[in-house]
Length: 330
Image 1 (cartoon, rainbow, N blue to C red):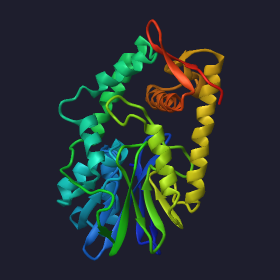
Image 2 (cartoon, rainbow, N blue to C red; image 1 turned 90 degrees about the vertical axis):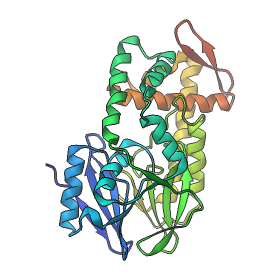
Image 3 (cartoon, helix red, strand yellow; image 1 turned 180 degrees about the vertical axis):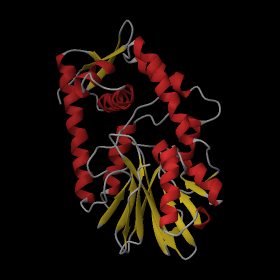
Image 4 (cartoon, rainbow, N blue to C red; image 1 turned 30 degrees about the vertical axis):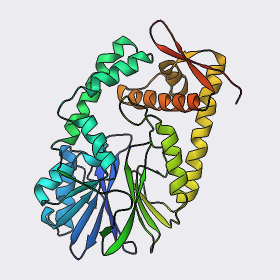
């Protein structure tokens, strides 16, 4: 077993725990915030054997048990943050907290009725996914269910609700784009933020257009960056990579990054009409794994949606797929 690394930030009263994940992410950050009434866990990690071993090792090393956990806050519904919440809840008895919108998305994605993977595969096929990749994509999507079981009983908290942990009041900030109903936690006295995947220090959070989810995810994500960039942040604790201090500059950089990517997609469409799948390969390369392709194609579609909203491209119904063409100067 790879032993998890953990770091105590004394001034902020936060412990960062690196829960092991596969390459290229390598780990997801869970955070422990101790208080007089017990400890709060922010984001649980995926439900995998190594993640379970990580948590058992860390709690023992810190002289705690699962019964010392008094609440579990989940920033958003993605399996690497939400997946182990049910397991931790079973062992601790602690409430699992997430936003109403995030819970809706979790139920949509991981609900008992199932069938979401079929809807996604048909959606991708309509935008150019080759038939020979449909079954591998379906299997990939089905595999995500293993990382979220058992699912927790959830108590909803939302922006504007009062929230305390570690003996201090925290502001809940809701944004979208990367995940509907994503919650970041801001502590104004110490100017610190637990920002989940809303803002990451080295990589750009994925923004996906998916059927049945938010209609305009890139617009929502960029609105969220502008909203978060208004906060005074001395230290940010993200869902991936290391805590960082250049939070506002990073929000600006991510906004610029997406504008550059929008321009590049429009340039590719100036050359000739293409399907979203063809644009995806032109932008991200043709050596993608099925896992990488799922996110790259969904992100391509999110950018095409924004370009259509701005009146820069139009859809053209093709024989087999929907193609896109540029219609105006940028």
